[in-house]
Length: 492
Image (tube, rainbow, N blue to C red; front, side):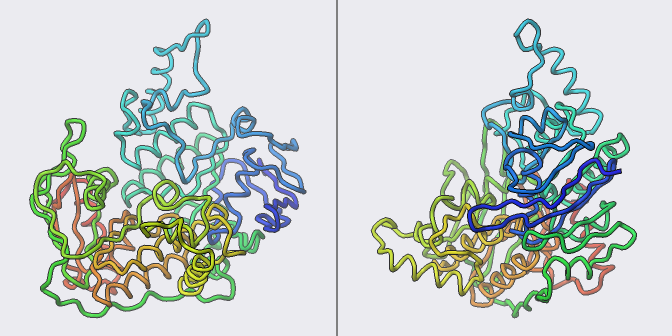
């Protein structure tokens, strides 16, 4: 029985058709994965269902009743919850305050904190979320932010839970824990809709799969018929998925970045603890670790955001390029065009002629395969993959000797990911030094020359990937398991 039914649903934004005559059923008490490249219409369809947008035509049924929610609040009242790719939390509020905001348990119009705490603590314990209710959100890791968002859905008694790229911020071990929670939800009668790009995870968790391409349903199947080649072909169509380029040898003894005994304290907590590593010219050094083990602080120090540290940071490069971990809040101005965002690196971006902006935009579009209806369109209307290509292009064009790439392909589709990976290797082969901070182990193993595992602000193990035969799957699996243990403090 379908708990949700979309019949011929169409949603347009001006001349852009985001959802094109979509018919799709979601069965009760299942995990239904929705796949597709960035811009395929996955998130838009779910936002239509949840009341963020109004569909232009078609019908949506929830529990056999036609619905057209006017706002997300209407959907919440129907026990529908959505965990967004970009979190909606207030940093200066505690976990408790964020969760209950707008849905407080009151007693005579006064928030009943004892009862609220008891309710939330029960959920935290039941699902092993490991959160402290009095902790400020600003002091939490990215993965803990996600747990707060999940707790919000549980507090609101969500019966249908929609997750938009939920594993993008998680380590392999955290992904396993998250899937345990998902399976528990299903065993309790909840219905899960999971938007993702990660095909291997779909094989592990999905009961049903739907693939969208250019706003249309192009593929549907049940778990018994799932295989990666079919899914990959459905996602990209007739375009073949490119392979990652090969790295050239890297033997330079010249170091572009050298960090010695780096320490950094925040709120009386030691975030970086005698951190040591160095990056040679023409190599990729990968930082691997569970979110919240000093990666943010390291990036802030290297990009000049934070300056109150002890130890030495030696950079042998005239400039440093930086791709941040959150493209929306840190990497771009949403209302600016491609050219305007790229010229933000210039000292006087507002003095650049329109003709020059257009020339820059066309170069980015051609050289970095950015797909956009018009060169003047604001970045907010581009898909996540195209936004990321613009940010990446801007930093590469600075010709800096050191590139710091923080989660460079988070939430990006398959072909965009491979495109960015190939450009990273291209920069490395040109002699650029790259610090790659990522929670994606496959990405790190594909691109890095050396991986440094960070735990509690310290590099606890360095692994030279020349010592491993990663084409041998059993050896690769053993290495992934070993790194996973190091990431949680085991085995070093």
